[in-house]
Amino acid sequence: MEALFAKTKEKMEKCLDSLDRDYKAVRAGRANPAVLDRISVDYYGTPTPINQMAAISVPEPRTLMIQPWDISSLKEIEKAINTAEIGINPNNDGKVIRLIFPPLTEERRKELVKNISKRSEEAKVAIRNIRRDAMDDLKKLKKNSEITEDDLKDGEKKMQDITDSYVKQTDEMEKKKEQEILSI
Image 1 (cartoon, rainbow, N blue to C red):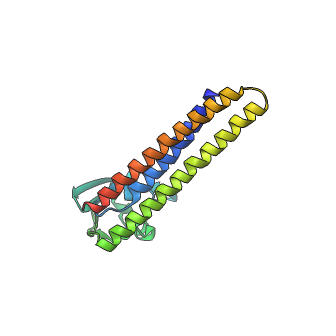
Image 2 (spheres, rainbow, N blue to C red):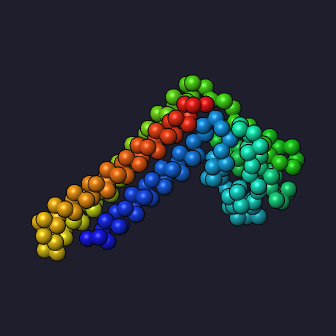
């Protein structure tokens, strides 16, 4: 039964990690290197993440600077950023690429907050689905007489406590990201 709890926690942890990655990719008006995490550049025929072929720095709060180690890849990086449609046009000066993040409008902030709430709700649904599957596994154990009725009740309570803990963490992540977006 403990293995079931461990497996359930691991799956729920993956939900939180996925939500965290999604939140990092949301542009909040500040320069954040995480917006480039999902962009791959065709580098000598191999899709390569930008952070593996260039130094990425934040010289100013709204500016991201990408300095490739191989200058010949500059055009390919610029092309990949344009194709990714992150909403920022890269400025190429021949040595580095600068991404200047425009300030967010009030309307765009509200739209981002709505999107964040939606992603949070999707994560909670995923967590609840994991709980449901784990509860089914507990009931199968009871049906196969591997655990007693009391063990089943205790297991269901513990599973609910685990679920509540992860849902609470999801809410906290959502609030933190909302504050980040609205406080600019």
